[in-house]
Amino acid sequence: MNIGLFAHPLSFRERPQAQADWLAAHGVDGVRLAFSYHSGRWLLTTSDPCAVADFGAGQWFRDGSAPHDASRLQLAVLGDEATTATASLLESGIEVTAWLVGLHQSGPATRHPESALRNAFGHPYRHALCPARPEVRACAADLVARAARRPGVSGLELEAFGYLGWQHQSAHDKLGVVLRPVDRWLLSLCFCSACSERFTDAGIDVTAMAETVRTTLRAQLIDPCEAGDIEADARAVLGSEQHDTVLGVRSRVTAELVREAVIAAAGLPVSVRATSNPYACDGKSAAGLDTLAGATGALTVTDLTGDRDALRRELAAASQTGARVTAGWNLAVNRTTDEQQLAEVAEDARAAGARSLVLYAYDLAPAQRLTWLRNLSRFSDRPEAAAVTPPPPIPEPVK
Image (cartoon, rainbow, N blue to C red; front, side):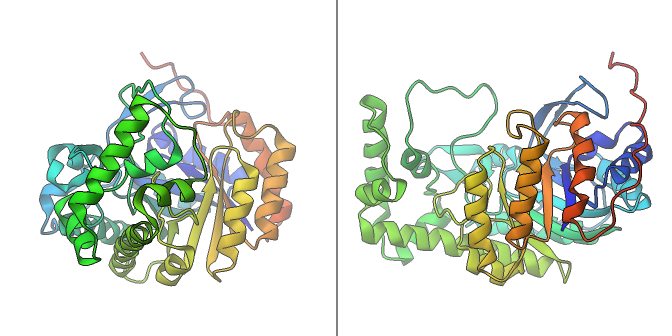
């Protein structure tokens, strides 16, 4: 089983080759490097300790290819750091997978709200493009095709290829009531023209369903109810037949989006960040693991909250599909308690047949924790790593 890291290319601005060599010395086999990403504000721990990396949503590589037909949704080119980082990582013997955050893109969603996910109240989400819209699918396929052609990229990791929800950590999001899981899911239902057409074709009265959703959410804001089982709550709101139809429509839209991305990858291996939870609206594709495994042949299942039991459940479900499975876990201090727990997570992944364990994220977790990765070599097919070289020199503080 290989050991890898998720990483943002901005983490390789300072001394990229020294950093890549350091990761290799710590036993890192592969890096899932963000070639496109949502906006963020990271407090760095390793490449430039205590620096604040504040960046927008867009892509982190430059190429000379012609824009696709829906070029108005083209992602902003924020730099070419992914190209530099890839070259350094390859020089160190580390495999590079292009990590693509697809529809979680605030730039095009804000500039073109007609392409954004639109909830039952008619409000567009400025951070989420709708996967049912043809221009969005064209943009996503174009991103995949261009990333797949980048030199040195050995595979693609697709995140946010599906429906996203209301909840989004940005701009001091605040609410003064308790939303149940079902309320968060209801706020992820899209009623744009493309989704409304899909629902209508499936026999749903879209106007009536939107009113049902609005009524439920307003009631929760006025007099909050305790959360029950999300499936039971969702069926109570929509009725069982309509509930099943809605899930079916959203699953088909997501599966079509992923299949089109695989075609655009032109033979390069693709893994999709997936979940067995049909109500997920947090960046993981929810279209049924068997369906997604059939489309891509590879699944990445993660739990970044520190819930080991949840990761085990996802691994067990993914292992039944016959797909190549990657497990993802969070190395942050509030998610991984100690080195022993990390070893146990690695054993869980290995026992479930995962090909890789990929940890989130380089330059967010404490640098000292990278030393733990060397001890995971017993879960890998490679011999133990050599003695670790010192980390790259700490650069001058940001002025």
